[in-house]
View 1: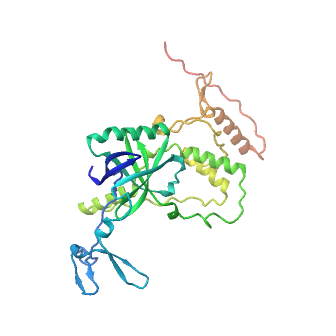
View 2 (view 1 turned 180 degrees about the horizontal axis):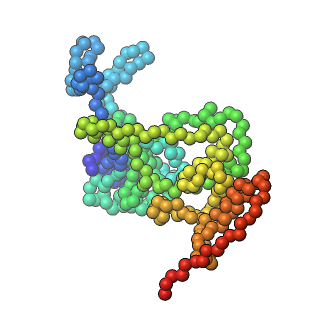
View 3 (view 1 turned 90 degrees about the horizontal axis):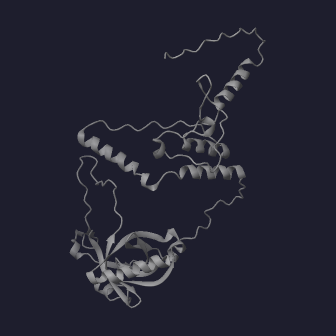
Length: 337
C-alpha cells in the first residue's frame, strides 16, 4: 500500500519513524458527467475572473477571503514555517480509555507502518504499551494544511490512527429529542428487547452494499445491450398504527414465524435459537412443535391436537346435534416378515 504521509511518532523522548497508509477504500461505482444531448464528456475548466482566461494548475495558489471580499494570498512557504511541532510529527499528548472517545468525533482512518528497520522495536513497544494499558493514545498531527487531532489504537498487530474532530466541532444535540413526555409500557420495552435480540443474529460480515451491486447490474446490462433488471414490486404491508402490534409482527418476521393473526405466542425471552447457518436456512423448531410418535405409529403434535379441538368446537357451535355414525376401524397393515 502506498504511503500518503511520512513522519515520526513522538512518544515522550522516543521517536518512531512511520508511514501513513489509508486504512479504507471506496468501492462505489464511479460515474462521469456527460452532455445529455450527445453524451460528450463534461470538463471543468478553471478561469481567472479578472483576465477571463483559462489558467493552468501551476498558476493556481491559495488565498484567504476577508469579509469585504479582499483576497489575501497564502503561499506554501507561508504554511511551511508554521510555529507548531506537528508538521512532520504525530505528537502523543495523553492516554485515555477507548470508551471515553465519542464515536461522533471519529473521521478518517489510517494505518501506521514502521518507516525503517530500526523503527520495529519502538513501534512494537508502543503497540504493547497500548495493549497492556487497555488505552488509546490521543495525538496531534498536521495533514493537508491543518493541524488535526487523532487517536492511536491497536488493530491486530498494527497501530491505527483515527482522525478526530476537535471537541468544539461536534454539535450538542439540543432540540433534537422529542419535547413531549413519553411513557413506555413494560410490554413495549420487552418486545423491543426481543426485536433487538432477533436482529442481533446478523453479523457485520454478512452485510453487503446491495445498492452498489444493483448499479453494477444496470451498468453491465447497458454494456451488453440487454434489458435492464426490473425493480422488485414493493411489498404491500398492512399499516400498523399500534406500537405493540408493530413490535410483535416485527419480531415474528425477523424470526421467520407466522404473522401472528392466528393467536400464536411469541417465544419466551432469552430462549436460544439456532442461526440460519446452523440450520441450513430452516426455521428452528420449538419444544411445543416437536412431533412425538403415537402407539399406532402416527406422528402427532400437542399443538396440532389443541388447534384441531378448537377448530372442531368452533365449527359445531350453534348447530343441532346429529346422530353419530359409528366409526369403522381400519386394521393396520402388517409388514410381511
